[in-house]
Image (tube, rainbow, N blue to C red; front, side):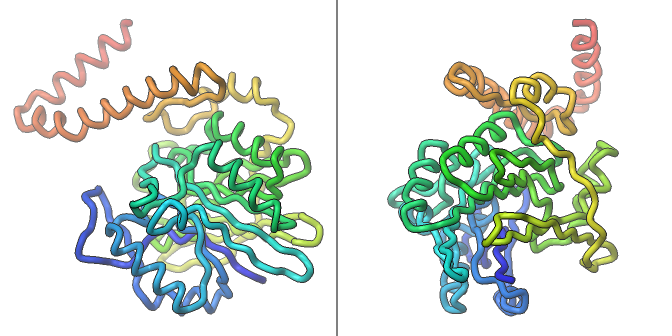
Amino acid sequence: YYTILNLEAPLRSDTPIKKWINLYQAEPLVEILKSLNVIAVNVANNHVLDWGEKGLERLLQLLDAQQILHFGAGMSLSEALAPVYIRVGNKTVGFMGYGWREEMCVYATPTRAGVAPLREKIILQSLRQLKERANIVVANLHWGYEYELYPLPIHRQLAHHLVEHGANLVIGHHPHIVQAVEIYQEKPIYYSLGDFYFGSLRHRFESLVDDDRVKHLCKYGLGVVFDVKTGVTQRVFFETENYQTRLCPVFDLDDLSDIPIPDYDRNFPILRTSSRKPILYYGFWHQMVLNPMKLALSHFKDLLHKFIKPVLKKAGVYDVLRRQFKGLKKRW
């Protein structure tokens, strides 16, 4: 097998960015990658800039030195958008990766390091270019909210558009749990691989989850085996317990293949397992007006939570105000 991973963190540097947590890899990482026959990695994710441009640069230099290909991030926008082509038998497989700004991915610019922007116009343009050289195109998308069992409506629609424009396989990651899957126009879509590969102990995330429906899923990761000749995929599941990761039996995942988009959008509020962030729908008015308004309000609430909450707690009035607000909300 040729192995492709989502590599979630850079090497350390002297300039970490200010975040809740700054993940990093150590240089012996490459020994593990080579033992797994990893020939390429997606680096379009929300942690690859945790240690600034220098941390990303050190990681890319290490990968280059070990002849491990990488895609999805770079020291400029052109580098971030550059795809990877791999020859398998008589087929050429093209890989591209993109990260979503709303989950803290830092977008690259022509003069600044970062990840390839998860914007439909940019992705479809890259997809057209890949199809000129590749027989098969695999799209890696770092998207969605953490601990959601199902993809956001806007992302499901985007996955459909990628398939309609020629993507043979869509792979998603970021939510920390294995999400639903789908076959659309005979092409497989895996909305989230859980924590494969994250480079951190998966069981530690269970304490962050309140919903019992997803708590037990935090220890799982999903590997997708893609047959280049037939386009058929198989699933390989991993679990982590007591600091050990091992193969585990395959289990069923929710399949969205037979659910029309309008029905899915209508029922998504019921399907949610995390309600902290807004639901984003596809469509002109949603994308131009409603989604930006929802996101702006969500960011404002995050700022209040980050800066105002500590002040109120210090003054000893936070719990009182919280109870009053809950009472008003309930009556309303």
